[in-house]
Image 1 (cartoon, rainbow, N blue to C red):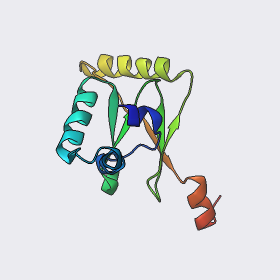
Image 2: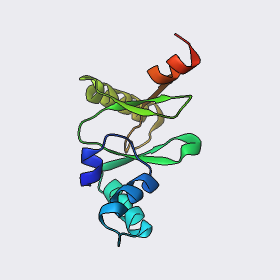
Image 3: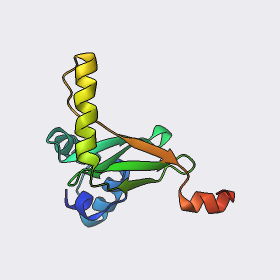
Length: 123
């Protein structure tokens, strides 16, 4: 948990394991997976599926959404003061229209990060 609170890099389980294994060589990959599953189940951490790059993890202490680079896969947090209220409105409307019992949401925006824009010479 401390790793995710202090690292805002949206790491994969392998990244977390490799970084923590340097400090705790007895740590197993299975323990890393199991701990992340528990943190997700408790609602402290969210999973972000990122195409071929696998699942990434994010400490979700303050409501936010993500923008993902379609070229390199970089994930960046976006904080918007109205996000929680707007997300609640969308959930309420979705439940009203469909009859679903809403359990959560995941909102993502896609585009090119500044680094890829420079590499690809786009604006």
